[in-house]
Length: 135
Image: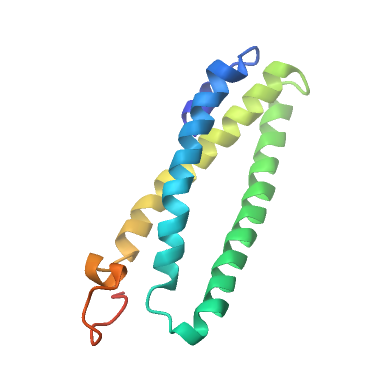
């Protein structure tokens, strides 16, 4: 996200955007699957479908709220930078990516502190009498 704050108004997609998008895709791909598994760890087999639906609905709602919030930030930053010129639009998008990076940086330590599960429990190799998640 911080890389994308540096994209100039007259920048090239292949040079300025594509490397950041590839890095973002790799990062999201390595995060979403383990987070889905973590969210479903300790859930009984009979409840796995409902729990999975809840996780997916939460991701959709979070995405909608994020788009609404960051669209507002982009519109305000673009208007403050002078309207609908390419430089103003670039400034608005830079502000959004800066705020998104800030949110991610603030949330990461919270997630690391709240997620407390052993590797054996997460991989399913722990004994059956061990609790699934330690909060």
